[in-house]
Length: 189
Image: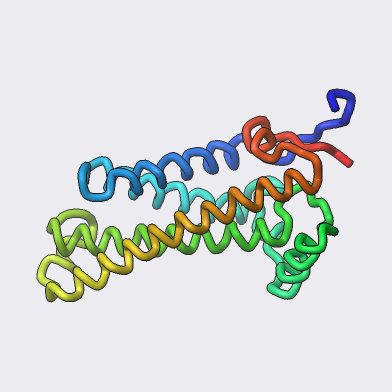
């Protein structure tokens, strides 16, 4: 496979974003209650990374831009149907299911971060929303904590689906997609 032409698909910033987000999420997830300061810093890192990715999705290179990989629901479902029948079309960038997963993951992470900041303000009287949440009724802090935990767990579920999708797409198309997200290159054909 060394004689197969490789082309650059994922730019360096997308790759750094991807692996940094994965690392920050797992740090935040694993430190939950025991190491609050590290948990909070990981959450702020996730917020900064999401902000970067939203901007990069508008102004970044071709394969990083949302307009080049976000597809309408009917195309996503048609692609998933084609996966089930082992006839998915190969895409250089994100396929329709992958594009949808990007949006769902970013949304779930954003909700996780926002509810986390609300909980941090309510329970620790700290963070950017401490003044807003410091005098909030206790039930409100508890509600945001439940939402925060739900979306953290939902995000983990999405990560498992994402990894399964990457493995399946890699097998169906005969390529190592993890390596592509490390070196930025994919097979040209």
